[in-house]
Length: 282
Image (cartoon, rainbow, N blue to C red; front, side):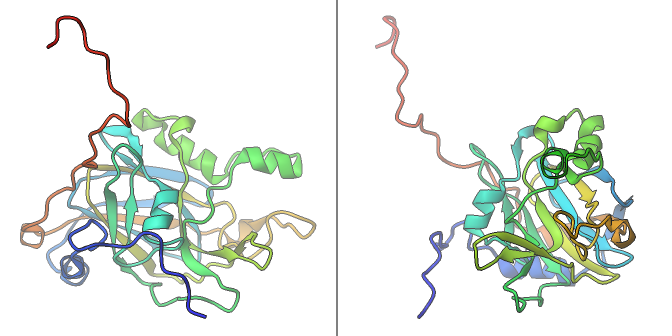
């Protein structure tokens, strides 16, 4: 029996029907790039950095498999941030090359477009798992306390909170994530599962910034997720934790010819509401 069609589909000229040739050129023509920043995210920590519209940033696994939790905000207005659930509907529960990460209402525009992914060929494994996950969210100390009765201060939620404090953001700004290098799926009971990361030293995923961004990344304290984190067989995964890397690049101006940063959503209505007119109005 054929699968039902996707609910959200691209129409000609829509933001879902991207110019693949443009993004492929960015991925392939790397000779003129200039590296502007390089960041190491140590194990069980987080880092934040800025990316200008038209730049590229790459997240790497320099020492082997390691999961990372990524947050994105509009650098000038953090109310605009990654909308994981809408991205799942528009792109898929797992993302790769040519997929976009979308922002929240009332902005609703692509924040980044994925230009390259060394794990693009992972596909669907024997358990139904796929890589680069939008199904789940960040680990946090609140759920950990609920499940174990213990406090641990270096969950991804906490790492991201500490990372964005110097930029004037707080815990309330941390949001649902893209789990980079993470394999997940739904089991036969429709329950979320996680598998060991397939990343190897040198693997990467690369993003083109469609707008000015503040980004934050946590090196998950679960490491590569090869050991159980909760339940009767839970272990401390410290031995499978590794750092992550981030690189930010300027692109040659010629590559960006014809591109412009996407505007916020065109809808300008009042959701069916109408303000009362004063007596002085016609």
